[in-house]
Length: 360
Ligand SMILES: *Cc1c(COP(=O)(O)O)cnc(C)c1O
Image (cartoon, rainbow, N blue to C red; front, side):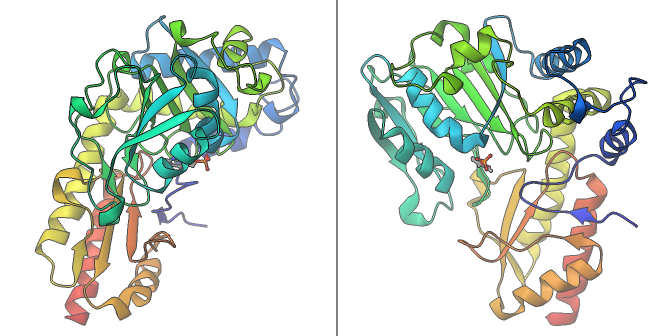
């Protein structure tokens, strides 16, 4: 069996060396005679796995002791509720920037627990760009400001972070965590579902400034209370052991690659190859505004719309899988997360060229 270049938006491609290592240890982890899926989460080998994963992530993102790192469950969508339940504890209001469907869902969920002010939105333009954000948009008494650093469905990303003054910045970083360097100190809280750049679906990473902990709303479920999860080292109950294990392997793969700076350079090279082609093509056209283009998810359309399905099939015949755009947007989306090598993006460009030559 040969592996394809997988452009899936998530769950997405994992490094093959990680899959092979996980496969090899499946029935027998380090000579124990049983695998990680069969191991008590209270056992020493599993404690070592969690601690090592946390240490590797801290090293990759340069996370200081002022922050807790949590491995929780429920995906980013559960964080849409956990964030307000934990942080809407002062004015019980928060500012949200609406840059896509996940950002919209986060705001809608937060409304159940307090006042949500959507201070900027690009919805009217189908989220093809980010709204203009100036410091005066924010409420000084907001408990936090929520952004989505990379808009997976629309293919946009922030190039600079909004200046929120003293108000903690909270980011859904699900689709570009570890794909691009960030200064964690600029955030009050970062959360990310694993299935794009981290590992198998199931585990969700939360990085939260410790001074924000311990003030959850009274109705906050115990499982969603960050202070509880932090106190118990993400082991309040049975965590998703296997996903945490594989995430740890991905972290170590990325460290060996050279870290986030090195992979960001590769991600930028991949994106540049694809966008440069789109900007010079007569058949393909990028959807997102140039200034806000994501280096993780490239969205584009064919000027001859009726050729879209044919192109997706053609690409698959060339070993390029899962290029169809999100069902709500259509067109093509090439998700080029960390595990996709530069050759994958180059193969996509060659494929578009070949298709364009025969369909001009
Ligand atoms: C994929 C994604 C989500 C949804 O994550 P789940 O883990 O499925 O809940 C939320 N936000 C962003 C930015 C995403 O890319």
